[in-house]
Length: 455
Ligand code: PLP
Image 1 (cartoon, rainbow, N blue to C red):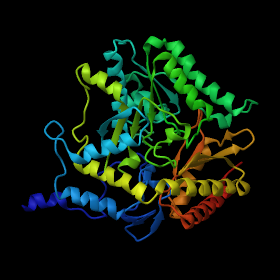
Image 2 (tube, rainbow, N blue to C red):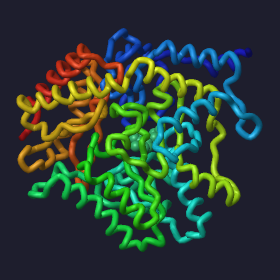
Image 3 (cartoon, rainbow, N blue to C red):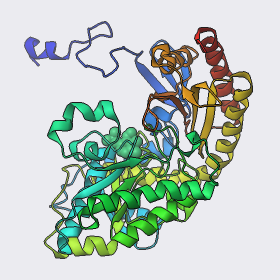
Image 4 (cartoon, helix red, strand yellow):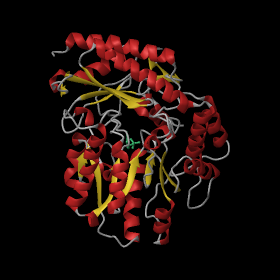
């Protein structure tokens, strides 16, 4: 190596960063991670109360997953899909088919959630063309929602700040309100309320014309967009029925909810639902490798293949290393019975979060399933009016928790107007002592916030 080329690699922690961050702030360097904990370069230990961005589902540093990856690396890490099949991809596709609703047994790999969502939209469109329904181009989604940051995923994402700069460049897709039933102040039964939100889909399809309606995409439990928002039970089947009535494909974006996060492999299982196409990512690679997948109804894929093939693909899709990691992650979930733990610890954590409502009257709602949980801070619990934005509660609480060495995840958005919700989504290996630690650190952070809030 020449002296000149050596200088390319000169770096120390004091070197000014050449990265740029959305948030502007520079965080400590991550040094190592194990289970639910992450250590920084100064040796401080953080409890990962959000599994990163709801990614590290099986916890950090799992040796069985790392060993499986090493074993794969000893053979090959990449074989281009047009030149070679690879066994890990076949095995993972087979496992995912077994874990999906009947009839959904065709798998297409990607390297992340946005890529998986793009794949779903493109498959739906090509299916419509294959059936001769060429006018179907509109993918209805919800507001707020988050489906990714690439252009296609953005077109169906309902989250103003992310969409606005690009609005003139993309074809905005029709939106209906997310089922923010917890904000309603009327006397409807839960069942009627679920139907009311689902019927907004029917109204939207009628408005745009069924012949133009391609698909409806939804997060079965809202993620960062709505903070673990669960719809009333009656919503799910009604949405399915409406899609069937109008020949509209139902896409479940399970990028955050999938792979055990809510206590079942897919969140769809809570309502016995069978969407037509499913997007997965996050927990599939679980922080060990970038990985995403689309799982689709066999007849949809067969029609598209028969009509000339799926006009879509990614260089890294289905690479052996990523698939070996994904397979080891799923194996770990079953071997360590992590879904049972998620349901059990999730229920405990949720009840402990609800317990905080007694001391902190500004906690307006606690919600979620399994270990996809959130609480929302409001200005008034009776009216559920949000705190004024100027109070900056969401950023403050995240920082106070960070100083307590607890990581929580926050976004400021809520049906139609803004609110402060905090996702508490530790890894599926969380135990009772971790729950105590989370609640203890959160209580200290909330007390600090109490002293600052003007209610
Ligand atoms: N869909 C949902 C529901 C998500 O939560 C996310 C990411 O947060 C995405 C899609 C996009 O995934 P990625 O950031 O891996 O592209």
